[in-house]
Image (cartoon, rainbow, N blue to C red; front, side):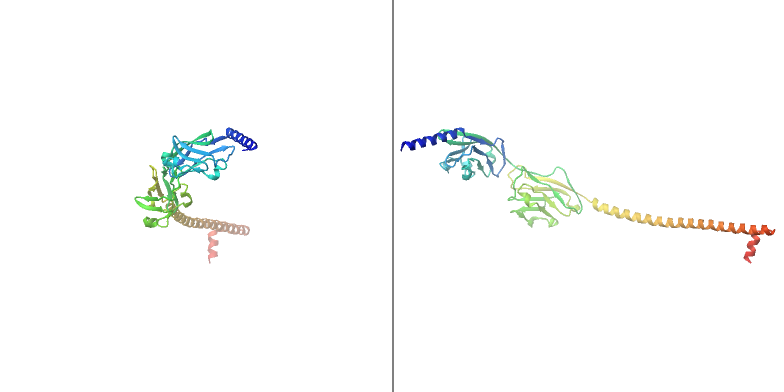
Length: 325
């Protein structure tokens, strides 16, 4: 090797050592929470970014090696059996200094403190990520759901924390009768009671988010009762949620009340018209009698004036008699 080559190699080595010495390795500062059987990304990266494809990257939990990558490939022999085929690093991400670990098919025993290490020559940079793996519980409703006859109603039920149950079976029952069954990623009508045919559905776009609420259409009084949403194969201590449905016939009764009130009003209106006619007739008769009396009074006064001028004696009875002959 020539002197020039040795100088160049020495310069490169010094630059590399300087970069590594100033390099920072950063992990997620917040604890990571994940759900059983799902997957999670434990974040770890280099700052400034450095191509780590051909360097040694190691993830451990305690004394167990989760994954070890050396000379551009995984060292499967060093990996703990518990993590086989469940831990992975991204080749593309490594080229950008991203050492994040993808851990899939999570188990409750995966909970722990994980160490991310970047090793080159005699320099090791490390940081830690805390992972907690929990179960999702099926949650119904503590408060009863109320609906009127003829309405559509949603019976709420979900998984907490959210969990994708699209590949699992979901059963809705009421009084041991199957209301709705979701199986093999679709509605299964085989077990459904005929009383609920074409009246129930789940929100397909929401099942992947853990929302297994039931839509019940055209509610009737017979639908009232305790409903149970059940995910039989869910890895959890709580696989069922309860929802009480109360059906109120007030809407129907209000209609009857309206009809009755309408009939009563009609009867009252009829009576009012009759009374009005009678009172009106009496008023007209009184007015007519008044004007008749006024007319007779005027005629009487006229005759009296004529007879007073001629000196004759005026007798209303006589005059009426004459007028009658």
